[in-house]
Structures are given as C-alpha cells and as structure tokens.
Amino acid sequence: MPEALANKLPYVVLLNFLVVCSLLLVLGRIATARPLKELPGGIQNAAELVLDWFVAQARSIDPRAVPIIAPFLASLFLVILLSNLLGVLPVPVLQIPPTAYYSVPLSLAAIAVLGALVIGAKLRGITAGLKHLVWPNPLQLVEELSHTLSLSLRLYGNIGGEFIVALLVAQVVPYGIPLLVHALGLFPAVIQPFVFTLLTANVLSTALQRGEKPKLPEEAMNVHRITTP
Image 1 (tube, rainbow, N blue to C red):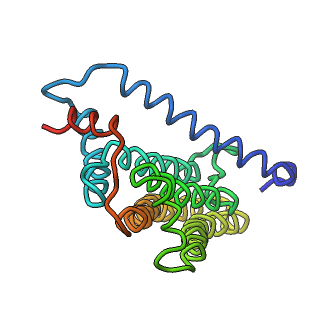
Image 2 (cartoon, rainbow, N blue to C red):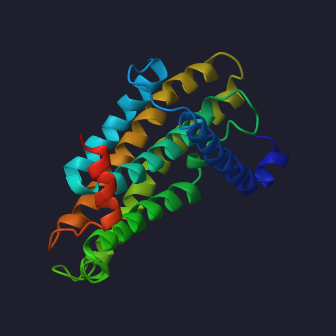
C-alpha cells in the first residue's frame, strides 16, 4: 500500500463505507421505482429469492414482526456483503474493504446488538426491553458486550486477515498469484454476511423471546395484514 494512502487510511475507509451505503440507496431506489409484476422476470425473481431468506429468518424469530425484523437483517447483510466485495475491485482506492479495519466491524456489531435491543423494546415495551438486560441474569449486559466483541472479531478476523494476506502476496509476487488470493477471498466475503446475519438473528431472538411475548405496534400489525396473503 502506498505510504501516502496509508497515512490517510481512516478517511479512505470512511469514504468507501459511504460509497457502499450510497450504492445501496441508489440500488434500492432503482429496485422500487417500477411496480412489481404478476409474472416476474429474472431480476424480480432474484430479488424475491433473497428477500424470502430474510423473511424466513424473521418469521423464525416472531411471525408477527416480519415487517420490522426482515429489513433490519437485510440492511446489515447487504452493507457487509458490498463492503467485503470492494476488496476484489481493481481500483486502487476502492479496493480497500471497510470491513478489513476493526473500527467498521465493531460499529456494525454495535449496531446489530443495539438494534436488537431497540427492536425488543419497541415490540415488548421499554420496561420489558430494559428488564432483559438485568433479568433473569444480572450479567446479561456483559453478555451483550460479549456479543458485540464476538460479532466484530469474527468479521474482522476473516475479512481483515484475507486482505492482509493479499497485500503481502502482492508485494512479493505482483502478478498472477494475487488474483488467485482475491478469488479465494470471495468465499469468506460472501459467507461472513450470512454468519453475521444469523448471529444477529439469534441475539434478536433472545431479546424478544425472554419473558413476556412481544407486543407489536399497531402500524406494524397493519403492514403485516397487508403483506400476508
């Protein structure tokens, strides 16, 4: 990595993360610009296939809260996936994946855990959501912190490790072999978003299913009635 780029690495990581978020917003606008077809084409079929996976995860947590849980899990998955895939781009600055630097995985893990607590408080009530942190296990707050560390270190270890190996190989053998390393890096780049999302779903399930059953807001119930056949 050039020394001039290394000195501005925090700004590059932030820039690339903003590029990922902006790209997702643009793709979301494009995907929702046209009305859905009764006989879907290839793009709509692919989108519905991906969406079905998140809906299935949300239903396994709480069937009544799908309109709230599915977008939360999908957003985390897509941000992590696109961030990881930046590492295979042949562009000098953009090929630095934000998830290869610990500040980004830690932030995403904190969002996942805090988001699970906020969703739990919204669905079950603030009192029940706060009670989850201290009852029946007074050390539940420590467990939430351990979830944050576990999620962040798992993501950073896989993506950051692969990126460091690719940099070291490129310094020794600048042609040929780095392409193979990047190709092998596609496997953790795609698998890790699934792992992160499944672990987040487990944290959310624990927050919702401990104690009394969740109380779904009226607006979410209305959306569910519309989307359920």
